[in-house]
Image 1 (cartoon, protein in one colour):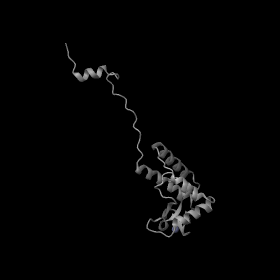
Image 2: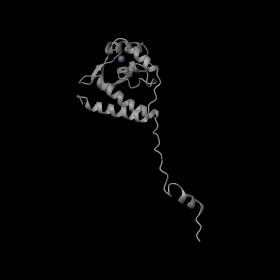
Image 3: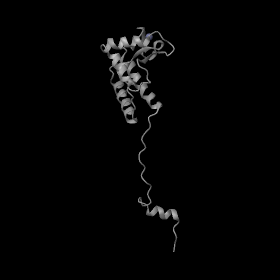
Image 4: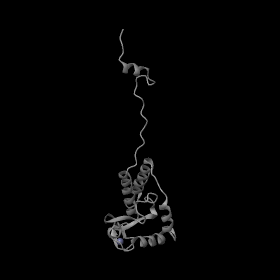
Length: 159
Ligand SMILES: [Zn+2]
């Protein structure tokens, strides 16, 4: 008579008949790194949207002419607010000086004026209210946003 070792016995009588128990797919994690990656694609699109066919346009807060690859996509309400981080009205072409955290001469106020002129009165106010809501992105949602803006960049006529 052959005695099975204990673990073999347990294995053979287990519900999975000795097979590995199928693993539940792990929910993919939303990391700051992923948010930053998606934000880079989104901001790239904003800079392309806001420049002309020669890749130039005016900074939204000081009106200096800037080139697409030397400018930023500046947020009116900072990227800390997840509910407005990918809001197209919240982000505009901005020179690096105006977008610098060390530079302050009322840029946020000027940005709000720019937004209201471009999208209609009270838009900046509405963005302020939107930014108060807590937004928690899922992994899938972020991947979808990234895919969408990559597509939109490809579809831009000047590329
Ligand atoms: Zn500027």
